[in-house]
Structure formats: structure tokens, C-alpha cells
Length: 300
Image (cartoon, rainbow, N blue to C red; front, side):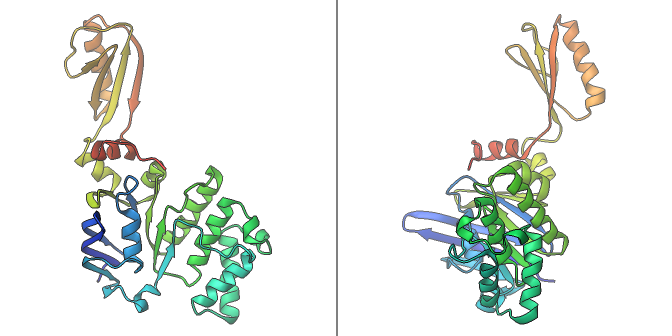
């Protein structure tokens, strides 16, 4: 069976800027992939290339085993970072306009619109002009308009950018429902905590190159290593303690079996005369993996 998406050796240059430097990427049916990277890393260029809006200088992009052509792209749903709606039209009129662009009509279109309004929690806003909707509502409508035709692959570029927490939670719930129906999803996001919780695979791009690809657990093992970070805060510094790194009044260690190792560590600290003020356990996060790989935090 062909993968839903197969990107091989894709390169793209804009003048002196090499936006994509031989990107390889594969997405299987029903998979949810988070595409992460600093601003200017090449994420949006890659999404636009997959969507057929940017032509690569080199490499190939195959969707459902076929070249990225118009016929294949009809099986795609594309949600750009910018709101792509008709501000003077109502919510319902926007859905109908996009549905007709997808070739839908009659009772089928009406049924799909009703489902989209309920799915995006916008039924009570159907007659509201889009320009009067909140930014979060516009984001939800933007997604709803892009999936009316039932795409098998959905591409989203920063779908929660500038959205308040309540609307962000609703958007992730909407995408989760699509995933449960078997839709394959690729999205870019700056919300690392949410990507860690929802995306089966994480791909990190930096300077146009894929520098990491795998599940969260795999990326942790490949970068910072498995186990939790233990930080022991002392009343005052002590002489070196076996298995711990001294950082001022703190002793730091990586532990894989918390219940077994912590009592042993505390015993060693006490033999050195250390008085423990606080004990903190920090589990690995996608943020810590990202910083390890790129040397900086990911911010909107």
C-alpha cells in the first residue's frame, strides 16, 4: 500500500534563501504528524509545496502514490495560516460557497453544511456575518470550510495561531474527531505541549532540513535520554555526591526508576551532610527535546 504522503529529496530556493534542503517525509493512512520548527525553518514552504502552491526545484511529492496534480489534490483539505474566508458573507454563505467550489450541491451539500456547523460549534452563528465573528470562531470556520468535501489528507498551517485557550481546545477536539474517522493530518504548530499530547509523530525542521523524526518517546530517547530529571535543593552546597551533578545549592540527576532511586540518592546526600529543602522531578517534554536539538525555544 502506498503511503498517503511521500516527500523525497525536496529542495526549494527563494533567491539566496534555501528554504528546503532535501526534505524527506512520509505519512501513512490515519497518522497525525506535527511539523515543528523555528520561524523561517521551512515549515510553511513545505506545507505549500505539498498543497501544490509552491513548485519544488528538486525532489518529488507523491500523494496516495500519485504525482501532486490537480486530480489528486481534490483529496486534500488545506487550511492556511491566514484566515481565508469571505468577510462580508455569513457563516452559512461561506460554507455554501466553499462547498460549491468543491463541486458539492443539493441535499448532499446541505447535509454536509449542517454537520460542519455542529462539528465546529457554529450552528448558532450560521446567519452571522464572518467579519463580526471572533478570531477563534473564524479559525474554526476556516477549518470547517476546508473539510466539507471529506478530504483524506488534511494540511494545516498554524491552525491555532492567535487563538484563546478555549477556542484552541475546541480546535484540537475537532481535529481529534477527524483523526478518529481515519483522516490523515499534517500540521504546523507552536503549541509544543499540545503537539506532544496529540501527534503520533513529530518532525522537527531547522534551516530547511529535517533534524528529527519520530514519536515523542523516540525523540526523547534519541536526544536527552529516557528518564526523569531529579533536582535536589539543599540548604547549602555540599561536597560532590556520587551520581549527581552539583549546580550551586542544587544537585541534579537523571533517574529511570523514581521509587527505587530517590531513597538511595537522598541517603548519599545525607552522608555528605546535606540538608534537603526541596525535591523536584521533571519529566522530559517536547520543549526540552526541541531546545536540545535547535538550541532555542519555540515561540509564536
